Image (cartoon, rainbow, N blue to C red; front, side):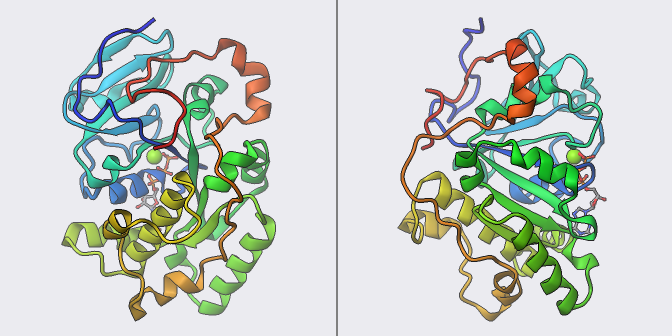
Length: 301
Ligand SMILES: Nc1nc2c(ncn2[C@@H]2O[C@H](COP(=O)(O)OP(=O)(O)OP(=O)(O)O)[C@@H](O)[C@H]2O)c(=O)[nH]1
Ligand SMILES: [Mg+2]
């Protein structure tokens, strides 16, 4: 239905698509800003009730894709006022280093009543992996587990769980206990789990450093994600290694301590769509396949 060419550079290269999921206020948009290395997001993504924001490397005005697949160019200032209803997602183009490696989509909270099957089905079938954010103070609720259960196991294997707001859990003992529970309750369904303090990671972005354990944990999570997306079980390639932080220093210990052992995926396989079975059961019939602006569909790198 849509035939227009992508308006930005770099779009011809197919990149893996990563959906950032989690319940209301779990840190998805804060993480997005950290990933983009922008203190002030190009859009006011911390507003609640925003449609999914799909970040792609490039320049140019954002594009709203409505529920009929019709695309409308808008200004960056207009992004925050696009209604959730009737919108599949908004493409936002940013020249951020992370976007040279993957596209990511900042989703509305999964607990949000606006998170209709339409929204899920507009985005999730296109996602190769998920970053699920769960806040440490009420981590991995039954509602989250129930959604995650429905996700394709191949996608689960490429996905990472971020336990955000770890700064709110004060003692090492409590953190260890929490992560032990996380490990137990999510066994085999994430590639890895990371405890992150997105506040300190945000402060690093502001200060132009990556000094905190918050930043290190985010970097470690992204490295794990990229390894999964490229099906590399071992360390990343030379160029990938340049793109991620060196975790060899003692400062990274806090991040490491809370990291699970790798659930290394077994074999190379084509990316599978993230379709929560329960949602797709009643939503797939109305699912639309929007124009793919990132090249041939489905193949990760
Ligand atoms: N202390 C602390 N606060 C955090 C952390 N992560 C997020 N926050 C705060 O939590 C609030 C919600 O964060 P958002 O990033 O907007 O959460 P969200 O998941 O995008 O929320 P919705 O889009 O409304 O579902 C903000 O005030 C953040 O500053 C963290 O690791 N530590
Ligand atoms: Mg948000």
